[in-house]
Image (tube, rainbow, N blue to C red; front, side):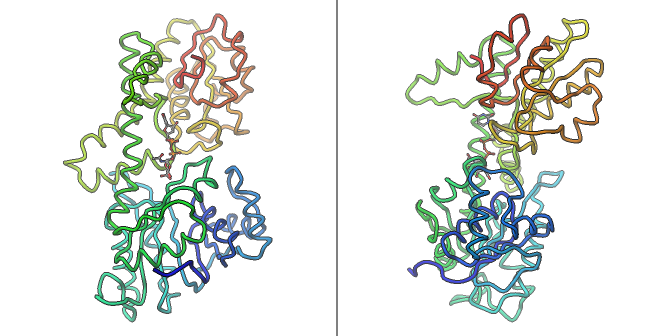
Amino acid sequence: MSDKFDGRVAVIGLGYIGLPTAVVLATRGVEVVGVDVNVATVEAVSEGRLPFVEPDLAAAVSGAVAMGNLTATLETPESDAFIIAVPTPFNTDHTADLSFVRAAVEQVAPRLRGGEVIVLESTSPPGTTAQVSQWLAQLRPDLTLPHEVEGVPDIHVAHCPERVLPGRIMIEMVTNDRVIGGITRRCAERAAEIYRVFCQGKLLLSDAASAEMAKLVENAYRDVNIAFANELSVIGDALHLDVWEVIRLANHHPRVNILSPGPGVGGHCIAVDPWFIVGAAPELARLVRTAREINDGKPHHVAEQVINTAGRFRTPTIACLGMAYKANIDDLRESPAVEVIETLADALPEVDIAVAEPYVNSLPDKLAQHRNITLERTAAAVDRADIVVVLVDHDQFRSLNRSLLAGKVVYDTRGVWR
Ligand code: SAJ
């Protein structure tokens, strides 16, 4: 098998995955050109600035730019390798929206000279990498693609799904094992040359469809396990049982490890990817679908419980602690906490809702338009509240002076104060 990659890499899409990938390659001496459709992102990266918050990434970006190994542009240049890291959201019917992948392929196709390797990193339904190869064949009939020739094709195509955890991206990018699925074995080997530059984990070579499915399965596995915990908490509410105590006891069994319930599952991965499995096998993926439905239904359950509690007061003030989709980050995308707050504000228009979120300075638009929601410091929100709802397990909330809670009704969806 050949050694480490030597050449120029174009990374298409400078988001949460593309930018860290570009940076780890660049800081290890590879010439990297980052490509994005967003002018502000390209300007920020060109100046060595970070367009979003992620621990340790800011210093790495400015370092890579200062070294001269990382540049950013709106136009895809000729390169020896192309890494596609664009979004793959889902349509309203839960099928994958591959329009960003298609647009990336259209940018890359005219730049190909023969000999390049193209890696799709975006989380994708089974068959997408083969589809990329077919699109390239249509766009460049002068070149041979791996799905159409027995021997060595002009272009190699593979899938290497990202697996990093937001909040730990710069560590996991280097330490996690990587699954690399090629249209052919040689495609996987060519792609592995790139990841060998920075990856200290194992490089697991496979076929493209298995790699695509493995990534979806990882996130569906977590979704199903969180759904189990969330279903237990709904049952616990109905039976007036402390679900945290039940889980704590059960987890002392040597083969039981139940995850933590919460207000629902947010972020742009676990709440999305399992739907691609449902889309690929709608009649068969019953557990995966049900888990999605349980987790998607959890914010409504939480809001309903709080609305019932509010009914016991004349005009209560409700403190909602947290808006982020998970602990200790500023990311509000698909956040169940935001959904709970919005539902409460709609259902209880006369009730004051004091929101505390130490990681952001302003309310997102959909909350800002409610006149009964204000963003406040944590202690102030708790102090004037009758009902305190914990929606995110930020460390700051865990260390709150508990005497502030005296005489208040607490609904702790994350179990931070047990
Ligand atoms: N959550 C719970 N209870 C738990 C664990 C999580 O309610 O016990 C909630 C979180 O609060 C959050 C959501 O689930 O709302 C997802 O959070 P997460 O930390 O489990 O995962 P993500 O979405 O930030 O990142 C996941 C990771 N996948 C897995 O752990 C299998 C990451 O490794 C992937 O790279 C990432 O998705 C991705 O990009 O696909």
